Length: 277
Length: 277
Image 1 (cartoon, rainbow over the protein chains, first blue to last red):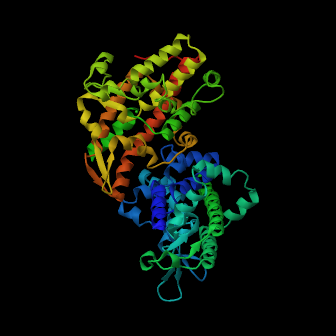
Image 2: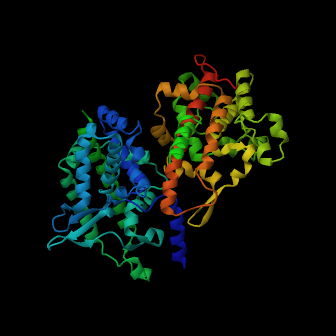
Image 3: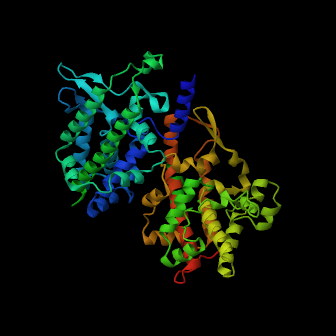
């Protein structure tokens, strides 16, 4: 009973913000803000010109806000797929992202509305692909890839004394619980005040495929050290859930913070290359 | 659809304003603060012993139950006649409806401006009147703080979100922005303080009364954006919110620029005063 009450209380606290999609609003905004801090003046001016003078941060969660408005936007997957053996990206999400970046490379030729939606998709989904909860592994040894592991299952979150969806924990739970009350500028300043150039260089080297492989490799480690639990509806007793204890939660928070920073730095690199001329 | 788009365009272009939440008041004040001249900032710093207007953005509400400040409860809204002009003070005072009698915001704002113009205030009185201006001008840019005497029942409009009854007026005061953007005050500045000097000049042109009249005309339209008793699920609620936040965020920005215009006029000898009528 106590657990039910605690769970309900947690749902109420977190219910005020969106838990359903991708990184939550805070993380998406933080990623876009970090990216913005690393844009060249020309790139910043050029991309903002394409989105009516707004900051890219303004549109960081646009895709979540509008996914129900257009079938095609709803179809843009926010979860990236990987071959579990190689951690290389496979399938439509990767292709969509690659295609969005290629479209942006010809942004001067794109109609205004198409350009805007492509920027919104890029700014949002690029961030999502850096979220460990948005990694799905497939067995690609057969004729068709077979889904093996996603984050759609429940864990027991010790700090909140409650059952918690693992996907949602990564989406927004960690960010909101670890630094309660922080806005995106707080995250930006805390993570990005004195990042060494060498670090920026090391994490922004390579291609989109390399970056995604890097994300899947890091996440696989997390999934491996952490035993999977059955889906919520198949498990009545919370005591059978795997427990995320305080130490593990702190480790997760560290990973989330790193991913937010890396996503922002890489996003800036893409935008600078395309809009910086 | 065409009518809907026209309404949105009209609302966005008229640069109009309702009682906002603490966070929104702080955001508006932060935009204003970012647009104060050095001379104005210095005068305010002296009046506030080093603090800025953001600190006191919601002060008028915080003091409402303190002895000597009870009358400020009547300063949060403005009564509007059918022709969109502010209702004469005598008619406000003698109106049969309490909600109208309490809508003395414009008179209170005029009184605060005149008091500062008189140059006869004590330091404490000066500080109080600056705070009144900051809060009242913010509220006069929240559509639901306009009491349309010819259509009072619309203030009881409500909707159902996941079968729970919600007040439309209440939604405007917080959810209209925070439901999409959980910004902190400095984030309001980052996102919304983006108008060009020409745009700011256009927004701050005219008198305080002319702002209220143009706001009133625009704000009537917000009651067409909801069907009384409308039912929303998560998806339809999100899409509906998408029709509101472009208006509410624009109003927050406009309020910030106008507060700055009034204060700069009052405290900077190089800036023309904003007229009351």
